[in-house]
Image (cartoon, rainbow, N blue to C red; front, side, top):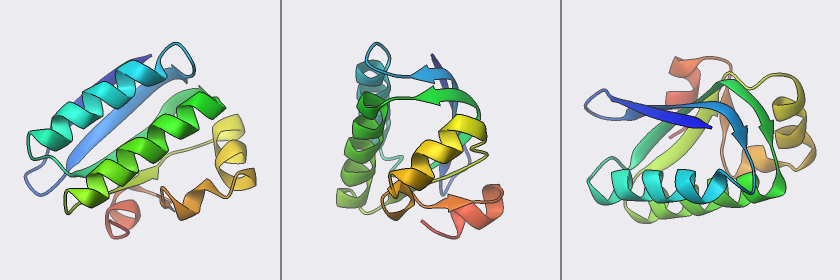
Length: 110
């Protein structure tokens, strides 16, 4: 998986590409944790190029959301499709990482 961040002042857009699973979740969690520690506590997650998320990936997202909230920020996402969208829906994960239809509506949920 590839994770990139673009800082937009009040928030950062984090793009996830590939799979968020047992192999990639620890690096994702560590990277986002470092960004939060550096002051980027409002993370907008772009899931448009994420094609798979496992339970380990959900745990990593939960941990990142908890850390961001504890730092006075939050996490929201957009662009989830197919299997990723189904996993979020069936796991009722939108209560932890709210999803918007686009970047602007997701940002409003942080």
